[in-house]
Length: 225
Image (cartoon, rainbow, N blue to C red):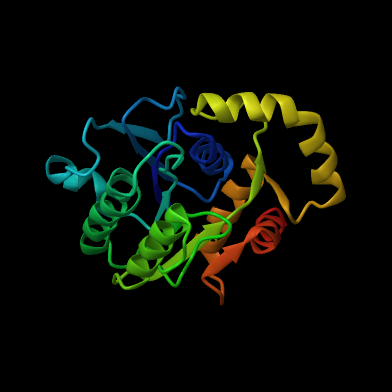
């Protein structure tokens, strides 16, 4: 399986990248982002792009793939709706529309969030925009689209969030997250389990396409067998 990862330098993207590099069934990984992911591996190629929505010059590098793990995202804190829409909806759809044209047999996995509003009419801005993005992705002509809605994710293996506030939060809550993960493993995920789950659904498919935390956990367990 050949995989594209958008946002491989972020916390979730790092987990997806490491899972792909460790999986013998993944032959090639292209990591696309604004900054290097900081890893070197024989099956890893990096495409560092200042403008991620402008991929005309690298279409050949984005062709011939089986799956895309789209892990790009920003916190809505301090952002107005227009700015958040440009990053969350406009950029995602620009990339996904191109990939659907170049790779019609591709499986597209989008990292959304717990509480996403599929009706697009709720009061919470980020949830509406995420819902609008999810709905638009499902209308594209991919082989399959899977929408991951994780809640709490514990970074493991030295992986850190790029958001300073999140880094501080994870530092403070690490002991609590570790305890909760052992008490309720289906609700407190890890960067490893999310990455393995992406590979599992891309490789074997799944009947449901919206995956909440327990579904992601179950898929990751299946990938480990």
